[in-house]
Image (cartoon, rainbow, N blue to C red; front, side):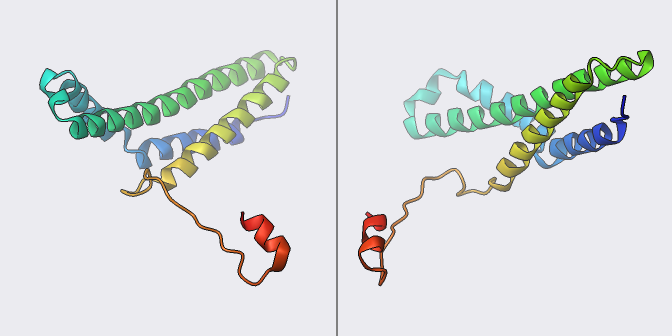
Length: 143
């Protein structure tokens, strides 16, 4: 069985980096505060504040759950790879490769979403397309 330990070490490094740049320790603290705020009955007196608190809470939960899912899946793949290497079991090589591919794709998604963490990044946007001097085809496309 081909040694996958270098690839898995790189993925483990990326998972650790994701924990850092997502600020998961601070996110958990903030989530605890927001959960207690959301449990307060007077929160719903101010609809705008309630929307802000529940939206932020949902975003934090999503980030934390996404990272924890990757961490759990990585632990499973690491354990499977270690057992397969110790026992010389080639039958799980495809499963390990699939796990590595899945982890890499999930980490790519996490890294992409982390790029959109600015104040305005969650807001909607309006795009207008003008055909310019492209003729009939450009007008059809712009509609």
